[in-house]
Length: 390
Length: 226
Image 1 (cartoon, chains in turn cyan, orange):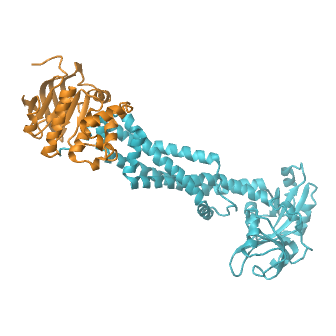
Image 2 (cartoon, helix red, strand yellow):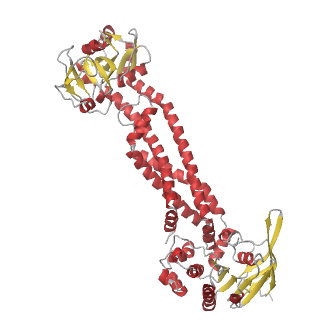
Image 3 (cartoon, one colour):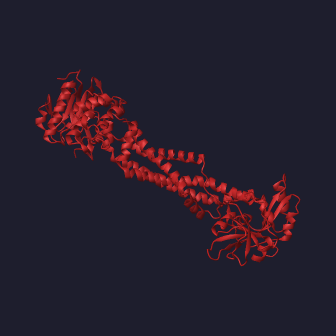
């Protein structure tokens, strides 16, 4: 027999208590691990979404440029519009390599009430999308009743190229001329049609809600943005600015989640300390007897410490596994808490997140052991025989 | 007559403790000399101080005043941390309620003092002790599978496995029937005679006490008669 055997025997003695202690730690670790993976995952997902937008600069009507950027990414109703004159001015700027008008609005499937966004674009809009990887995408003419659809819509409604898009979303039938590859971004849910067709469907003749801009190689983004800002009633925002601002916007929500999680951690810690103290109180006589048999406080602390770390590390491993298994549910919960969260996975698992969670657990173990180990140190061998004769 | 070369020499040992505002004099100026190989029965009514005296001798409790020489070394003021090592070297303990660890087998319970002393590799020693105590066939049983007598024999094996010169037994037969009590005392006699272990045993049973080489009668914290 060794100290590990002694610790294992103690843990086995109260199986349910040990199990509930492990479950407590598992819950704490799930919360902590989800937060850590979310912090990194949100940033990555947002970056991926902006990359999928495929533009360097976005021209939007005057207002809150970041809110409009979100609408361009996820769909939404933008009150103000840009005109074709403003679009031509942007397109004619010598530093602009590609300017693509974007008209968009949320539309709802009449039967399933599934929401999607109808985009009006020029065919060269496809060139902005690095994840589409489809050079053959085109419309037959500017007013064609044709559309490209995202992979999720195609899958959900069992549609393929050549099928008509049933007039469920809007009062006009469109022929599907392209199904976009799966990008794991919001694009998978969207419908793209020629600008003029969408202008007609939505009742916005000669108007658009944003202009996606790509610059020629070597052009300085800041300088071009400055010059484009001179166009009346047009606001220019770079995607990097938008990304940073959106990250800052969710920071307060993230802080709130963090406070909630630290609260859970604190409550869990109190629970663990309480359980450990109960375990030690139960074995007070036994520990007194062990001290009478020659055990030092350090040796008994070693045994109790092993029990603590068994509970903590089992909970740590289980918590990480559970967080990974229930990733989807946790993500949905986070999406409820963080409005306009980017599509795609909000969790990012890496070696460093696993290591930091593991280190956090070890720290938790040390913290949870302080009071119980003090109690162990104070137990006197006399306690083995106290109450024996009462 | 005091012998300065005694294994244990107690001079004017007192032990007081407080119960609320009241001071209880558990031991009052006890003088006692114990020689190697003694088998002493401590007798007296409940509260007479026999257990307190054994606790002080065994280093489980400290005296309030007086001198305690253990093998010629003054130990009355030795702090608890150092007593751990004195206990390992000098004492084995047997309690009335056995205090076996319920999740460990007989063999594992016996192994505990060796584990704490860092001598757990002495498997032969464990086996020999089990044979001597007559529990080798029960070595893999849990305490819950043993009778009262077997549990106390296991506790005795645990107390002597590390070869202590002194065995302290505080009412070791208190929870046993007369047959098992006699068996335990016979075991004590064997240990005393065969291994020259000094045995200090508190008991209420005069018949068992008569089997010891000395009887110390305690009353109100003092040694009343020897």
